[in-house]
Amino acid sequence: MARGLGITLAFALACSSVGCGKPQLEKVAEERVDATKKASAEAIGTKILTAWAKDEYPLLGEEAAEPFRKAHNAEDAQRAADKSIEKELGSFLSMAYHETLRTKDGKMDVFRFKATFDKSKVASEVRVVFDAQGKLTGFWVKPWKDQL
Image (tube, rainbow, N blue to C red; front, side):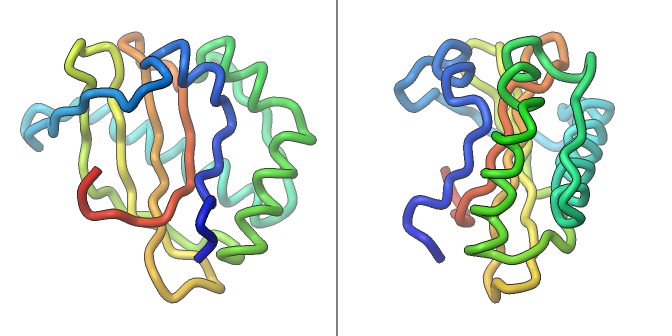
């Protein structure tokens, strides 16, 4: 797996939202996870990656924060991220929920999913980040790590 496979669609937004340093994250107990946000995170991640597997580049609407939408909705940015993932991992097959983390200040929820791609024998991570208003602010495909 490629060393630098962290595909970031909105690095500038991630820096402004949680700081460019590593954010302090805490695991959210499963009974405290917002089920609506969790389902939305899975739906958005699946929607984006399934579309990319078909070389389609969907526009995000109100489900995403404006700065993220501006970065993501550029077709060239989506295509570049898609082709980078395809080169290293192949096409998206599926993803399954793993855990939810929250920044210590409570401003961001990080949903982690284990994903499978057709050319990779190991799991990858799909990370979907929502702000406190439930808007998408981050989306990454990264090599899997059990602990962040």
